[in-house]
Image 1 (cartoon, one colour):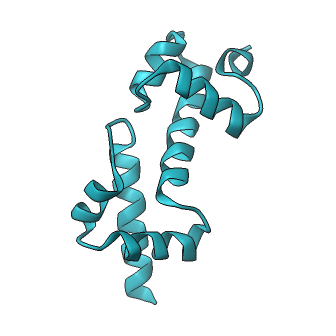
Image 2 (cartoon, rainbow, N blue to C red; image 1 turned 180 degrees about the horizontal axis):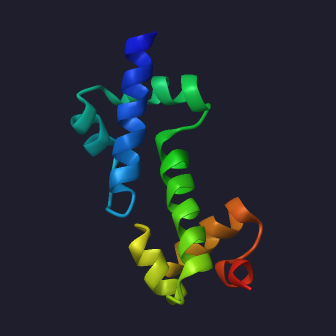
Length: 106
């Protein structure tokens, strides 16, 4: 169990360090030297979430920080947090936060 917890922390550290990049499950698995089944199993055990959900949560959490502290444009925040398009960023942000990034900022 201790080994699994250390692995979980490595996975989360990797997500935190790379959320702004085009991070895929395959890249994460390579980084932590585990199969996708193992990674998703560990994530489910500790968070009850999938890799994609955790990556999106990390990106949205960071986007909230940018919205609170900076005067960056929504498009710039989307790019800085790893979203390929501002339209998709706004969609995911609204799903997770219940408001658009612009509404959140106000």
